[in-house]
Image (tube, rainbow over all chains, first blue to last red; front, top):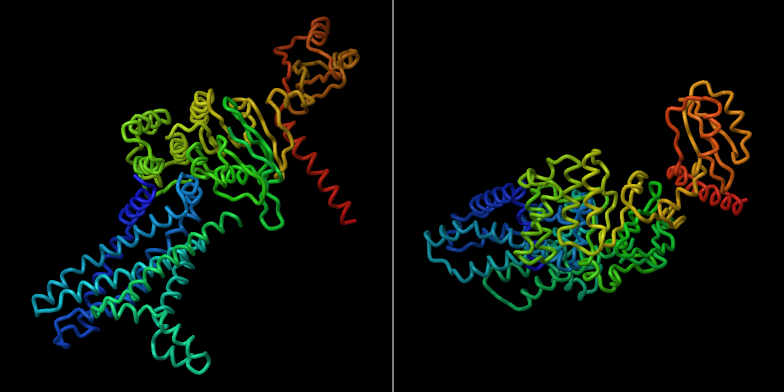
Length: 244
Length: 319
């Protein structure tokens, strides 16, 4: 078995032997369900789609993903197990990927467990299941980006609280970057092209496009490049720690 | 084999390890000795590839730990300071994780797993969470982790810290049986351990290598080396007589238990003349001991001498 899968299995197991996994799953499922029906006006819209469900995901991830990722490296630094892990025969990359994949698979599981709502909408009407599948894909990619951010920032500090707050902060900035308020705010002060660039950094724009069923390569690349970029930054941070 | 060449590590202005060059051969058990904060753990962390040296190199089995880290790490079994492990895992899960990380082949791994578990007497706790174990057990789990892949080079940072005397004995036996063909580097601040385990001692303080010798050689540096000590009630008279022996340099009396230590002049043997004198005086001596030398005294001498010198030098500069 490769070190990546060994690390991944260990991480996943540690989610489930501690309450982390169960607390996360329950809160995620309850919130995803209730927000869709109450805040999202699932019935009142009288449309057979899962838009109100997916719209809530960025905000759910904003709170829940940092809770998963904050311990990723901070706990290892603090508990001294980082020394154990990094003196085993594996590269920093393998360690980082193993941990990232564990969290990403776990979120995938949480997403998968929302299947009753997909069944519900099919029972109530005739939705475009292709669009819904795209929505799930987009949501999972977005979660991956949040996780990569969290993995990187958890490598920055020994404190889980600091890791949580930093991750949530960066994520909220990335969610809000494309909102009209933010764009208006920068409109006067910055050159048009820069404002445009900031707006395009927004996770919401890319996620919305995918969850409406528009699978544009550029949106997919946005998430993939973000993930890889943050993971590279995380590996560099870990390496920097060894020289300091 | 472990080799370090001018290995140096700085934390800001502090030089934790200062141009350390050591070479440990197979069959050697080298004890890295030093006061707290001497740089023992930092040096080991660099050899293990956890910390990157500020300058200098370290090689494990000929593999440079910076250039070929994976090969170096495969050849090395390492017990970090404090024996860290994943507390939420059971002992079995943790050791299985190490087996997977080390990429051991299935059937060989099972045999080795059983062997190691038996050697470290972990059979009864395999199903327990590491968090619930005593300090001594955790240390043994850490040791098991370090030797699972039967490495040619073993590096243990304070392997017997927190163990009771029986466990210490068991761990020392384990290291002893592994010592024959392997290269072993242990750090410790227990001087008894040096006697029990090591055939070579390196003393460092403030990151600098201060002594590299066998335990016996170090003992010879002690002023107690070759001294004779005994307890005898009512020996006030004979003390004067002893002092007049041509081979004797000085005499000390322990103020607590009245034990008398007779120090020889350089190169003299004094056990026989002292014994003869005591017999002639008709003194009853319950036991008489020829001292080998005291490591703790040598240790203190070596590690503080340099400190005074260094302090003197810095004040000289600032003045």
